[in-house]
Length: 107
Image 1 (cartoon, one colour):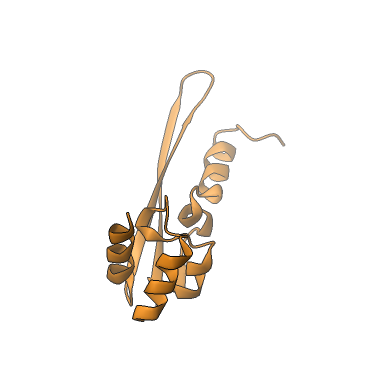
Image 2: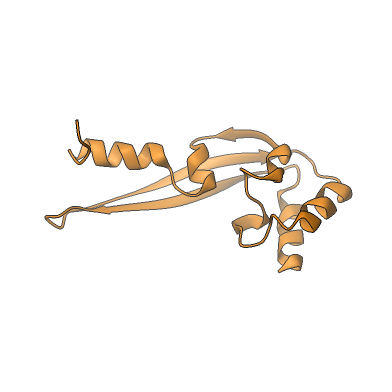
């Protein structure tokens, strides 16, 4: 909802937060490998206009935390640490490491 997105952006303003992603790989012989990826995002302090414009743009819809780092809210991001693709949705680095480490990637 709009009110949830508004609250999220107000809470994230000027703060650092963590984004967690879970990855599970099940091999053909039923071995299970799991990993949690954690990335950190630091937002600059947002003005009321920043938040109002972000809400009006509608980019918050269907987004965890009320924003998509690959969208207009990227202008709010002061710093990231960790996997960018984890913040977008799936840590490709971790997926490749899990697959390669278990001999599941073609050579």
